[in-house]
Amino acid sequence: MIKINLLPHREAKRKQRKNAYFAMLVLSAIVGLITVLLVGHFSPTASPNRMSGTASSLQKMRVLMVKSRKWRHSGRKSMH
Image 1 (cartoon, rainbow, N blue to C red):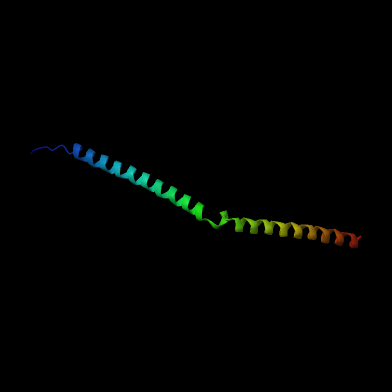
Image 2 (cartoon, rainbow, N blue to C red):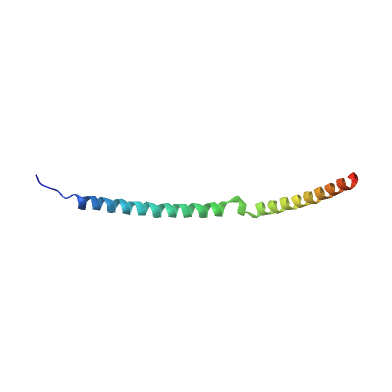
């Protein structure tokens, strides 16, 4: 019976799989980077209108906090 050495064949397949793995890894990283950049560019949170709305909401919250403090302090005075 003739013995056939399959190691070179296996090693060639292993090298081919390794190259394919790294190619897909690089491709996935590039696609992921492009996705992050596009989402960041077109995200509505980066628009000036959204930022002014956030500032307006913060101002409203500050007014409510001041009113609630005044209300709490006025309630304490009447209890004494």
